[in-house]
Length: 284
Image 1: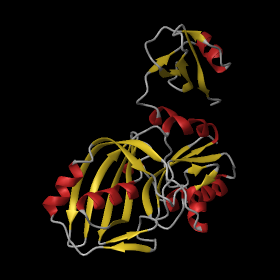
Image 2 (image 1 turned 60 degrees about the vertical axis):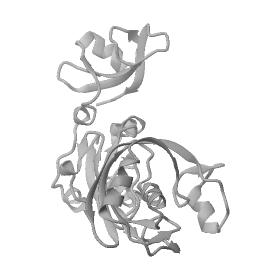
Image 3 (image 1 turned 30 degrees about the vertical axis):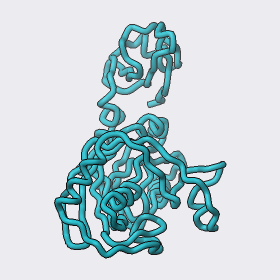
């Protein structure tokens, strides 16, 4: 069982809940997911089964697109609507003010991760420190925002679409938007609409998948943005055995396909650029 599933994660489910359901459905423990979504969030959650689990660290580097809604006037400890209120504010910014501030977040910046997150500090998850009330310095990361667009504005909420680099926390982004507006802001909803080249339109509900009403993605579809090279049966055997090969291509990382168009392996260039070596080899 080597499958790639695109689930439209339901609200109030953890990503692990979805993995457990899929694991039970297909009777396998070799299941993983790409890019954790908080319970409050919905949308694209890519599930990997069997050999597809090897794609985990490769695809996690992809950009992600979200539609988020912010609640104006409160700030919580979790940075979303499920948390305990820490601060409140009464000022309501105008639509023009919000739109103007959003544009200032375009490009690269340094973001502080949320206290309630799975990021590890000294070997422990941050949410463990949070739950026991232990103070800890929150890590900061470089992120990049490629596009951000105001979608809707009401008296105490606003929604926006944003395309971000890996590791970006939308909860933290909303907190920082509030800081620039001199108000309190907390995330009230989040929907992931795209991860890499996979869109929400390609997803299925969990019920669809549990009832066999879905189509899985092929390895070729998930990796279609990577350069590819087709090889004959002679080289296919070497690639399946994980042999390094002469570097004939100007690619840092690329895919070898057999003559039938099936993915054999992902290879990468060695530091001296003379050879290419296996990064992931698939037994498909």
